Image (cartoon, rainbow, N blue to C red; front, top):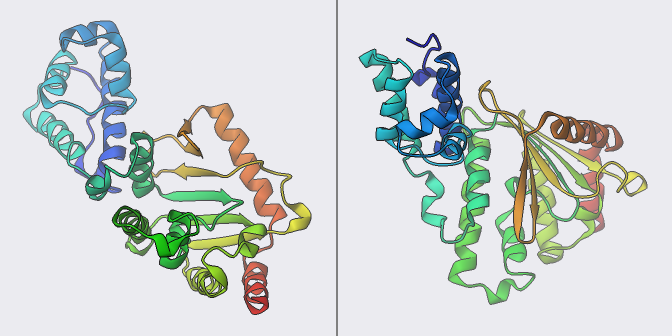
Length: 294
């Protein structure tokens, strides 16, 4: 029997089907390697291919209970309690997340991000055009979603705003992630939502920075554009099976980076941004000054 222990319910403390799927895939890979079985042989045992096992172990696809049960048998996991733990987690990994009712509005690549964001222990984000989504007011979000025409709102736009507001609830959870946001100074001078909308948005930022797990810094114009040429988000997780992930969104999709050399680059960039930016205390004073000029 393979010596690798299966995950237990306690390991599933961060919740979320996306993260759980990745954790399960990682555990199955460890069991396969401990049993000295190739991906090709494992794929054959579940009527699949080597590439299917690779996707499964990376958490890129959903897990079927029958496939996992067959793999556990092949890997020598016969203890009924251990098998039940695995299969119970497979069931939970297939349960729809809260965002399921919004899937018609979200491409697959963004659904993965919402799921990972929900499970993250730390969220490090840099923005140079907009206030980060987790810190936007409803009015600000409506202006962004309507492309500056909030008077032309539609049911779809309102649902997009509801989705964004729902995402923000992770910051109110008892197990809320630590959010560290760095924004370019230009974000504060771009009157999205009009003068009143920006005053309201800045007031909201000041309130959010009173939370012990939310940090905000502003990169002043004098140092703008040197450390990073575009926005990105770095997600970090408590689970050892979940690698850090850099998320970069573009007009037609998004990139997920998890290679060590790529992560090192973006970690160094974020460190540089934190040094270039105003300190959190100075940022609060800066926000008040900008608000008073509106």
